[in-house]
Length: 377
Image (cartoon, rainbow, N blue to C red; front, side):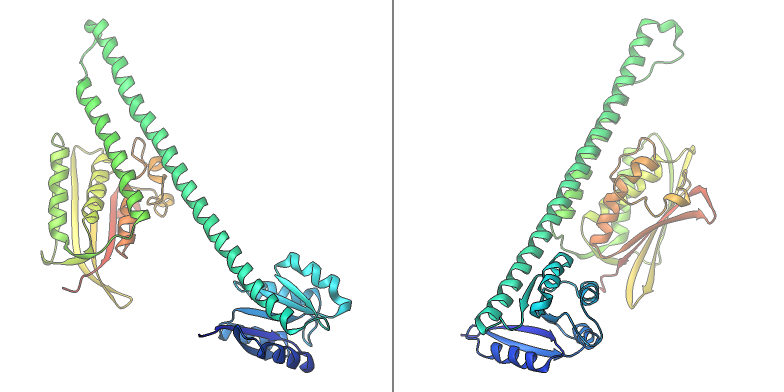
């Protein structure tokens, strides 16, 4: 039966003590201890940077460092593995206090025997691994709680906004019914309510899809960018039948493919919806450019969505794809559209950013650009 192998870095300037520890560890029946010995802190730190270890045994008083300075330096430089301090009888108080600085255990020279040394090393490593696993679980739980709180806050904000829109339209409609002679027009309340219901359905859909992207690993396969673009354009025109939208698609070829999945069409849909929703012009102009780009030894397909909408201020260009930012940036917008787009592109191992349609003047419209690795087919 193969024994467990544990790599130990021993920083000890007393060659007698180092040799004794080496002999103690040789007799282990459970573990193969592999020991690297250095006499100075600087040499030990260099060894640590160049090799992998499971634990460090550290003498507090070394030729180039002593006492609290040793503890401070080792705590700053050595991360993610446990440390046991070796100390003389006179320094026991110092060793005890060092536990507050991240040291996991200490052993007093002269009281060490083979069983105590082996047990201390094994227990320290196991305890350290348990604590690190607990910290990781705690971090994941905290992230999950933050995500759930985000979804809750988003629903409260946007659902309330949707309900408020319906209530306001109903109040105006009732006022017009009571005083029809004072009304120059009658609002179409059915259309308003229908639009608000669509907003609610889109919000639920976005939350569901974002949650799916965050919780599961989505497989990638070659997909034709041009086909997805055409589908998204059709979806947009069917959704906004009462608006004039002019499209121009520029592509060197119609067979350019990327590594993605059906979620990519969802990303295109959301970008185009934003281009229409945040546009105050009587005629909406959208140009979609598809091109090849070679960057950092990777072949990408670049897709640009260029519109003549309200644009995005420079101060918000970097945060526009973060959770909740769209809600602040676009009044009345749903807070997950561009966040979902960013997550989809990230899952495709791509990049996304926004720039001005006309450089230096954000008010002339936006250019949302994506780089997605080409499929190679």
